[in-house]
Image 1: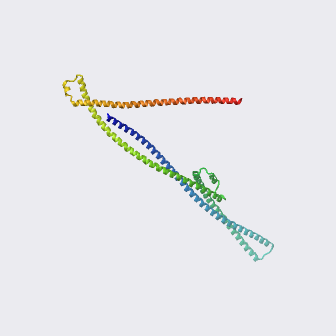
Image 2: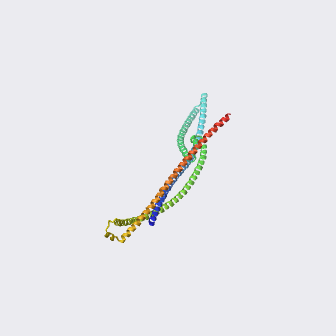
Image 3: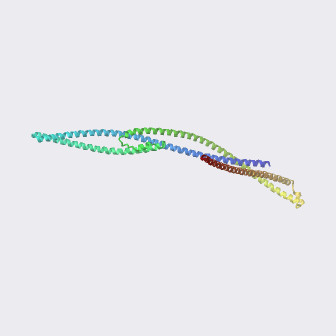
Length: 391
């Protein structure tokens, strides 16, 4: 009987340990899922950082392009202004010369009408008139060339102005993307949209843009440092999680090895139990046959020769059979008693739960009734106070 108790205790221990191992495996699965979620969040944060760095690089390139366009525009404006001033000065000189020549020509024509001239003077005047006419034509041609060059310059300036407006629009869009990513809503974006690089005072506005870009650059650097700190903390946390995961995996492996060992031992014991069960059933069959013979003898259904043939070993087997049956009955009795105690405990727990639930309901009902009474008293007091104030 003691062997049966020990084997039963071992079996119960194996079942309990199997349940604990199953629970630990479930907890490990939950922790592994949490680790996977944290790793996905880390990858997501890393993607946001990469996107921010890409936007910053784009902004730096746009800043460089804007500075380059500003310098190029300033050089072209200075060159065009210098050339335009020279052309206007030439035009003024030519206009003054033309006016002087027209005045001189008018005076000479008037002089010719009032006085007579010799043939040589007339020829000299005609030659001078031809020279003046040629000079006037030359001035007209030069003025036409200056006008053509001015048209070409205006066309070139218009093309460059269009390219500059497109570059400015790209810069504003990049600034808006970076600003909304780092700061949020920035009122300076509306100010940028209201200006154009073709304005006369746009170079003064560029200084304000540079100041805002420096502020934005500082904010971007601050945001980058913050994200880097978060990444460092997250990486540290990731390392801790990986280390904890390694420990959990090692514990899981130990539990699995222990489970495998327990399962192996249990299978070996189960095979031993099967062999013993077969052996015991064989002995039970033999003892049952002997018992049938003894019962037949007791009932007088067996001859004297059969009584003589019953050997001492057969009587010993019958005695072992009776002891085995008694042990099996006692083991079954113990198992039945434990099962009955478990059933009684469950019934007691269920009855206690019902009593607790009923007590909770009674408490809630009493509290509700008392609260309702308090409301009625409060309403009555309020009415009394109103009546008192009216008096």
